[in-house]
Amino acid sequence: MQEAWWKRSTVYQIYPKSFHDTKGTGMGDIQGIIEKLDYLKELGVDMVWLTPIYQSPQQDNGYDISDYYRVVPAYGTMEDLERLISELHDRDMKLMMDIVINHTSTDHEWFRQATSSIDNPYRDYYIWRDPREGAEPNNWVSKFGGSAWSLEDHTNQYYLHLFDKTQADLNWENEKVREELFQMMNFWADKGLDGLRLDVINLVSKAQSFPDDHDAPDGQYGKEYYTDGPRIHEFMHQMNQAVFAPHDLVTVGEMSSTSLAACQQYTKPDAEELDMTFNFHHLKVDYENGKKWTDGRLEFIKLKQILSDWQVGMQEVGGWNALFWCNHDQPRIVSRFGNEGPYWKESAKMLASVLHMMQGTPYIYQGEEIGMTDPKFTKLEDYKDVETHNAYMALRETGMAEEQVLRIIQLRSRDNSRTPMQWNDTENAGFTDGKPWLKVASNYQDINVEKALRDENSIFYHYQKLIRLRKEYAIITHGDYEPLCMDDERIFCYERRWNGEKLLVVANFFGEEAEFSYPKAQTAKAEILLSNYQDSPSEYRQIKLRPYEAVIYHSK
Ligand code: TEU
Image (tube, rainbow, N blue to C red; front, side):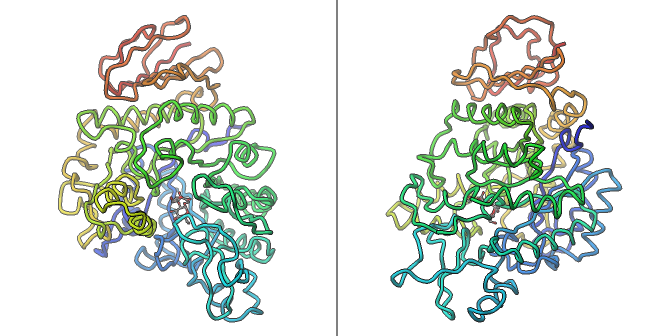
């Protein structure tokens, strides 16, 4: 069987609002992306994932869509988008668009219709329940804080919103809703795009009894009744047949609080559901008691265990992982698990090596390839994200001191990754001539694209090499995965094996030296494919790894 092209590919995620502004609006635009395509080509990525550009009141930066068939005017026109597709294709790159179909904005025409009266044909496009004893129908909470239900005064019923109250959940039980969504996706697919990223797609099927949740240690009441819900696999297969298969689209599902078993089912080839999945378990290993808004410490062994379990588990069924450290919802990885000080460069490269040598399709989030860091804003007003503001209020209500709340926000806010892309050392980092919608991080004179391109030793070129290695060495795509030294407190180590070849990845995850001894006999002589130090030893039986040192060995 011919190998699927996306198994050897690397995807680059663009958050258009913060990428490159050509019109002085302070927000990036589609033309700005087009102007940077040669830069992306130089990096070597195969596909661009564009986060939502559809008409939206921007309560949640485009994840609240009010018209699926229109582009946000500040980003450009439909023609601009069509040009982006052809400019990408001219460079032999592909486009993946982000589709948000768990919910729409409450500004969407369907929702307006739905609220006009109980018997409006669009009423059943959303999820409504009567008040229970004058209050919310159950105890489910929104992922952005507070109840997941809001009262619609006019008709005196509650509607469900798993996210912001302006993001009303669609009723997937209604066949018309599914048909309408599939039709909309086909409209976009017909424009020639190559893939879809499906926002929180594992939340679309809800347990129809809508029971109270009595057991949620992380406080996320309701989660078990809508996560990978009762009809989810049926819906995914249906969507596959109606949209993905006819257009030969590559698909990645964003899976919130999912399980390995569910993702095996979503991606094993004979299920005909999705090609790959994002899961977030490896990015919760620094949460205290599973709670995001805490300043917990990294549990390193747990991180290794999770990543390894998913490697092995997905391989067992022929499923496929989307590999990532960063996206627009996560803090910057170098600030989080790496080092912002003397080992900034080494640690960023180490993190990249550890991830990119695994099986799956790697995703790079804009700015990650130059080691962008969290901005550490000191004032609440500098943060714009709705979830951050809700969290601020909720934490303050617990009596926590202002200073401590801000410290947690600096660590956790989604705006950490949303600050404008740092292109050069001129004002506003070359992102805009206007006033940026979100402040530029203050270190843009040290960390920017121009500087990275001038330095042959930069993080950028390390990513470039990793992307190339994936293309040159089939073992990265196909090799079996075997975790090693799982109890080691500092070293991340694993092997890949395929057709008599072997890859060994050895990485010191911390800022102190670490002793490594290879737990098996070193047989063949190895070559170093890539290291983040100039002079790593070619013998790996016994090594003293320097801070954040990461070496990739290959032998036949
Ligand atoms: O995110 C889904 C999601 O659950 C998150 O990663 C979320 O940001 C986190 O739980 C908050 O703590 C997707 C999008 O990526 C995100 O930007 C949207 O806000 C969200 O869906 C709603 O559409």
